[in-house]
Length: 302
Image (tube, rainbow, N blue to C red; front, top):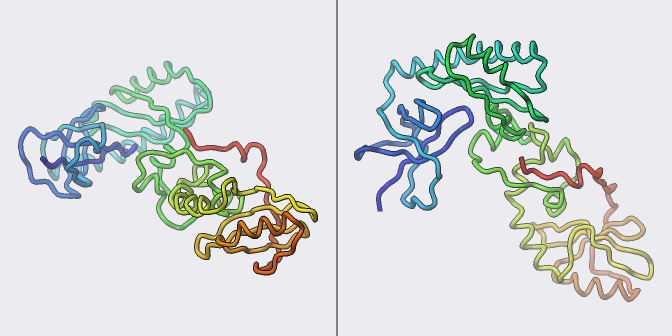
């Protein structure tokens, strides 16, 4: 099976297979000039694949290894892009358009200039494109991106202190909802569960399978916020501790009870019949956080 090289290029971190006209020995980190659907670009080899069916659908045609001159041209383009972004934003403001320019990017040969923007509504930017083409004297293309795409392009440091996942390695944005946060016993605090884009953190999906596996080991129908009816009032299932295999339950009087997963079915039968439970560990309950209607329906799908 032939070896396929995988490359990354562009500020929007395009990712695809490298098309070669002949066998070449490339290594991770090698820079080369290639032709993608956007034009001539500087790309970087980021890995290899032996299974083409599982590789990225997009591709880039290899032209040649990058020379020192081309690397210098790429650096000069970065400076020109900063100027173009400032000028472009001034044009948007002049035309009073409801949009935000996020980033500007030239192709390596400056044959095309891309502007990435966000907007909450449909924008007629035909006059803006005409003004830009007249000012920059090159082909102009405006690309609308979502909130998470903006973070991926601009980059930044997440609440964990590390580089944003979307800017570092993520290619596909998985839909993240409030239920995923609840399943992992996370406090429904937007400042702790939201990323720079204002959406729920992408990492909420990383450990979810482990939590769901533990939830599935409980009696059927057991899930966060489930109420257990008893003669003395309703008990509420708050969460599951994946490290200790214990279920966290809120007592009607406000106490927290921690019950071993293996004892949970017995616990439900005992308290449902009015009996008392002696095996669990009691703690003072933390205040419950209830999400607003907007937070409860929040989901990452842009």
